Image (cartoon, rainbow, N blue to C red; front, side, top):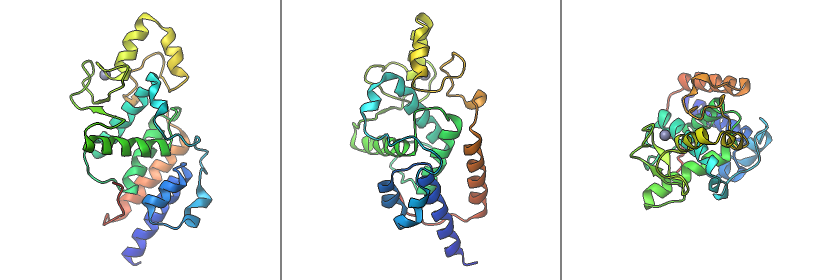
Length: 222
Ligand SMILES: [Zn+2]
């Protein structure tokens, strides 16, 4: 088979998967280089959460944990999230499927993850965006974290965990927003997390496809 055709098929599969995961149609059109009727049929096929872009949700301090998780998932796969290195739809798909597999009950979805990465990258380049990352690392756990206006000394998980030791009702509040294993917020370590079967299946399929195909020039997200 012609390798160009092969790559095009692979790309179309990625765009269909992103659409099935609920990535906004406008974004699919903007990054994908595919015609809408090729992907629209799949939109939200996996029962994704409703559209959650914008920044208002970031004002809830518990949501800082979600951003920290995204930073760490992203960096474990692609390195520095603040770099101006372009991200292909294929790379975006890997971040989204990995995040959703590790934290299936979080209030996150494909569209939110896309805009967060975009905001972090453009903010880092313009020196002062909506979502700023503390690259020096958290005082307690040492990992990079999102600088929340209300929680700035440590990452959100460490800061809130400290508070919750004094006031356990904080755990209950946090549970309404994010997935918390047991009563411990330090679940940025994925070991003990439950994986959603559907997403694990998708992850396996994408990593097999990835292995079988050569990487070449693709459309990029700024
Ligand atoms: Zn920390």
